[in-house]
Length: 191
Image (cartoon, rainbow, N blue to C red):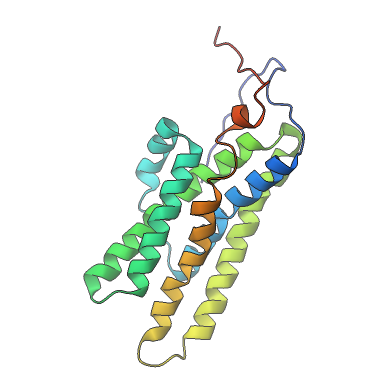
């Protein structure tokens, strides 16, 4: 869970408008919620929560979303193709790393990209995508549970890659932060 603290502002903060770039950026970033929701539908492994905040702070939100998407993609591929218990465990750990990074960085990215007036609405996109992820995981699990010869769980784990592809590759298009989106905006001096 991302925690925010109120920060005093002299009124010179980001007062941007809702543009197509803001909407696209927030929609792509919010799909990190689908990854989170999908993994909750399979199992909850928040392995990376302990160190994701440090990495997010040091390297930024967008790189953290990329790391989370890549870890989730590799984890879902390993889980679906597991030949032994070690591959399955490694896949689950990587899924947990992806969840930890997405849960840490996506709400922060959404909050930074959205204009202050609409910040709550845009951030609710993450929660909506969490719900979509939970629903899709349960529907896939329901559809694959009757598949014979042990393929059902493999398909269920491998299908997680579809949501991580969007989060991992889609985040390359929006700007890294509000300064890239609105170059005229100046950061307030630390005075």
